[in-house]
Image (tube, rainbow, N blue to C red; front, side, top):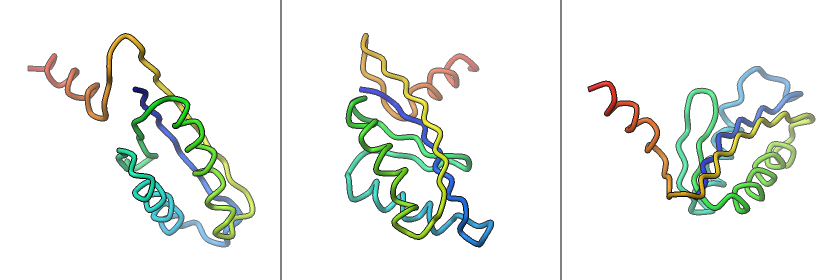
Amino acid sequence: MALMDITVVPIGTGSTSVGTYVAELAALLRREGVPFRLTDMGTHVEGPAEELFRLAARLHEAPFAAGARRVTTVVKVDDRRDREVHLGDKVRSVEERLR
């Protein structure tokens, strides 16, 4: 299981607001049925690494289909093979150390 942090930024939309595009990306993730969490600066997604890379390509393309003329996408993937990791595991680990 891997974790992906992805930030998709549509450019050339005629507005500084991107909330509508982000909502469309969240809807795509819901339809795919993958675990995800929206954050203020991106989205975290959980799944097998090879599926996450394919999903990143679809997320990158979605704003173009919605009318964006340019899109920048930043992707980070943590693919841990020695044990399963899930959304929130890293935060819980740090919080436990703070007690």
